[in-house]
Image (tube, rainbow, N blue to C red):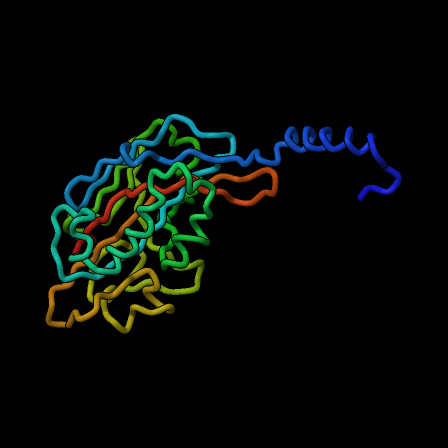
Length: 256
């Protein structure tokens, strides 16, 4: 196996090699701490409060929020797993998969972007006029994120996230220019949002239709949002993710 090494010398070398491998940090994979699900309060169908922990590991860079919008015929005043199927069966199925990661102590360092959320059609949340990665950096440690989805956007304004009294308007993704949300990037329920012709990779790629719904039916829409911590593994400079926590399934305010 090793040219020029024989007998007793080999016996001496092998334990040293094992000792050296054990001290090199080969099993030293960095992790980042999630937002505990118990730190999130879900209020009615239009508000949530997310209490961010006071610190994280050195690998931490920022928090990210994944979302997906589901068309529904059902009006649920307190969305919860027990009624996700009645909202939209796809929501129920999606949550069933994501729920296996929430609070898990074994499924750590899973790439929540490429392995879980993106293949399911979830998109990254944006903010109007702000870089959300900067807003959700370590400056939010120990603070509370307040999400508000008002019932009437024409009166109360569009859905927002507030931190330390600073209000940020929530924006839907456009896939970095790959699709064009209709009617716009605000989280509002309208005929342009749930029109079947618009639910496509070119327009509302962040929306899931409801099988069997017709134009004569009343259309509601709900946005499921999950928060993860994002970090960098300095061994290979790849992104790492915490396990997710459910922020809420918000009902989008109606515009028409």
